[in-house]
Image 1 (cartoon, rainbow, N blue to C red):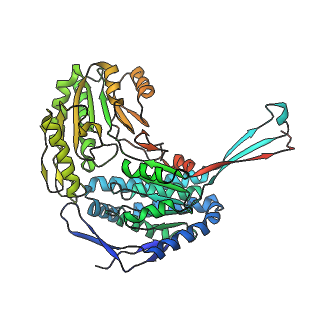
Image 2: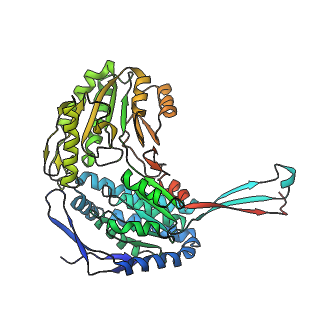
Image 3: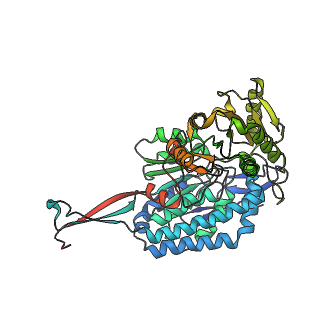
Length: 479
């Protein structure tokens, strides 16, 4: 199998060094990827710096046209790309297809936002000293962007780095996760078919140990990172004078309020909770991890949730009927197993699951877990949920907030006052009413507070994060 080449300034390149990508499900060889050397990285950096003023000056229709082209190409090659995502990440095919559709939408939104990226006009004659003056405020790129992406969404989280950068006129160097670089490299094929200038983008599957030098390079004034908190905050500490965007982890919570009490309500909530605790084997920063249920509903909700979890089907991720695939590697599965064992040793009860076989971990529901156990305090990033009763709305909201993370939360309620109170009270980046916290529309602002990061994704929000305001005042204007 010949090595998949990487992309430097929009051109394919190969290298003497290569690494293997293997399926998390059965260990088979999925591909071999050429690894860029120092010369390749330097060439990409030089090209990005050279391209920066060219990209910033690109007409909106050129940016939008390139993004629309990529969006259509992703949709056209959807089956092929979904199969690749499943092979390299172990994501069930159903979810891989959903990721492909979302990535296509992300680039489409990028095209639309590129056309809307106009600025604001303010009249200044609101005071006598401003008579005859008007201000035009536009946003301009800070400079070339380093985009670092994780393994769990190997296409769409790359899209969330690339599309806003192109739409805003910023060159970007993408560093995909070492376990899942193939989807990002295939995206390079689609970008290469556009009219973007040389240096507008590169895809560099460099080793993680070479990242500190790239992060520190002054020619990359913006670092946009999605991944673990430990790495993300280390980046922030290493380059305090750079503009750093961090999309980090979470231990997403759901609250089922007392009014969400009918059999239909509880069955709906249980199925959504079960599915989105275990989709992608729980390897999502907004996977359902903590579930709090009003005590008056707890017994019924517990039964419905366990039943719904047991209905999920594990197995070969290439099988469209598979709901839950493997974790990314054996070490990840062993860590999840150790955290569950720790909770059980401290008094937790396993309602279902709790077993590991290779990289697969059975969908698991725990109750009676101490509040300081790892499966409560940390991000499990595996198919495990903790289910606990709460005594009313005050207690429920407090339990949701009792976390060092704050990405998204879900509240099942029909009561408008409860919805608005949750929105005001919960220290998270997003509150989803009537559904799980795993919901994300790719155009909406997405990000967290506390340990969950800094800044926002969602194409328009990310464009703002990659740019700075610049004001032009016109004097002598008759208004």
